[in-house]
Length: 225
Image 1 (tube, rainbow, N blue to C red):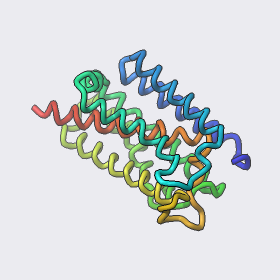
Image 2 (image 1 turned 45 degrees about the vertical axis):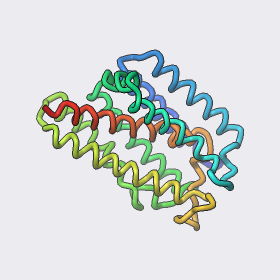
Image 3 (image 1 turned 180 degrees about the vertical axis):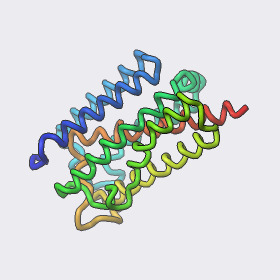
Image 4 (image 1 turned 90 degrees about the horizontal axis):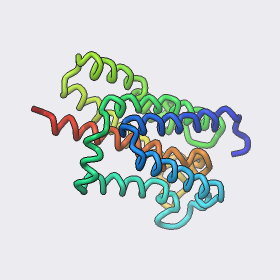
């Protein structure tokens, strides 16, 4: 990935740090939350820089170590009383605003495509429309939580729609990677996410977006009355 212009990884690193800051704010400045986030990013940075994820053969692929631990943690949060109490304390407004990071993420993916590091189908010129969530997040934040002009159904619909957009790009990205089960983009596989700092996308930004949506969906359902 040495051929990439420096602005691409720099903007992506700044986007990741913005995600950290917003999640820290959403957790009401929880020290355990910020410590876990930073330790996880440092750990995956070290592993990514070692070239560990560049080996894409084998089942399950090493790439699973990026995405699965955060997903397991999210499941544990939902299944445990302490986890649910922690999530109940998250700020819904900030969890909505956090999705603005999906705009620079999508721009990064587009730039990576231009430099032949991911396929076109993973960008907004292909089949990835996730940027719509990032573009609408400030509007939902303002009209839904500042002005209280959007009802519970509208907020639910937006979160569910954005969750489906997130699932779409995750599945597309996995099926486009040069794994044994690759199904898409054989002419230009998804290889960028095997490299630092882009390993932070599947191991951190995607799980944070997932958590933000399902926590807010839970809050909206729980407070339906």
